[in-house]
Amino acid sequence: MACAPTRVRELGMFSSLSIPSRRHHSRPWSGPGESRRQRVISIRKGSFVGDTTVISYEYRDDEGRGPASDQPGEPNGRPDYEAWLAELMPLLHDGDPVLDLGCGCGVPATALLAERCAVTGIDLSPVQIARARHWYQRRNFQRADMSTLEFPSHRFAAVVSFYAIIHVPLDEQPAIFKNIHRWLRPGGHVLATVGSDPWTGVEDDWHGAPMYWSHADRATYIAWLEETGFTVLWSRFIPEGAGGHTLIFAKTG
Ligand SMILES: C[S@@+](CC[C@H](N)C(=O)[O-])C[C@H]1O[C@@H](n2cnc3c(N)ncnc32)[C@H](O)[C@@H]1O
Image 1 (cartoon, rainbow, N blue to C red):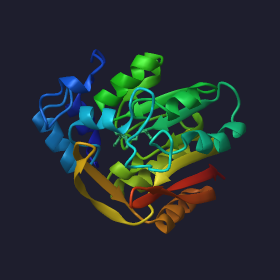
Image 2: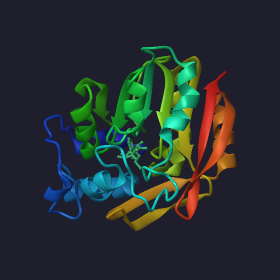
Image 3: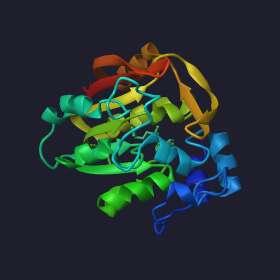
Image 4: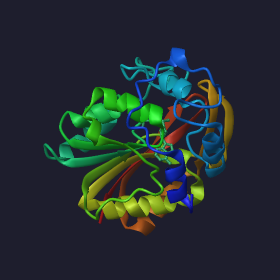
């Protein structure tokens, strides 16, 4: 996404988008507000592609539950975000600014953060942002590409990104970690899902639509974070189906 500013312009803004229903999608190649050309751009640039309406609702329903096939052992069919955030929250003060990169539809993670923090949610998908805005203060959610996002230095006390950076082309990911480091206050934390094993490709039918993935292995992410100036506090394997990802927790300095 070296020329991603163009891409963001091409994708346009969808501030007046109504809340989509999965019953209403009729074009299997796009979500509301997405033209065929935009989808081609998305695939070529390598991001969350395909029918974003289908994926959005299949991935997380309005209560934040997920498909049982992803997390068979979990009661809500999705990872235990509560447990993950319970390790971050004690390090934050009430009202601290927190960024959720690739926030999805806002449940469950953004909502949990919003209970105590001033959370900003960013997502590339108009469907996801429309759903998130339906639940929370509209101004807190922006449709944007995390690869081209700009924030002032030291803007956030923490940045979280669950299952999102791994949908951005690998060669763009080191720059995202550098930006996160710059956006964080000194001593700020990042909690993110990254790869466990290296793989880049498209899964043809992931919750009803094609999905692009791009990730390195755990050691590479640890190296990138340390080269960027983070101290890695821990990293854990998080199973998903037959595979899994790495959850990594790091702080600046
Ligand atoms: C698998 S979902 C995870 C959503 C949410 N974080 C969660 O854990 O429920 C991945 C999200 O990342 C978003 N995404 C993918 N590429 C992105 C990009 N370049 N910039 C911003 N968001 C992106 C997708 O639109 C999607 O909502």
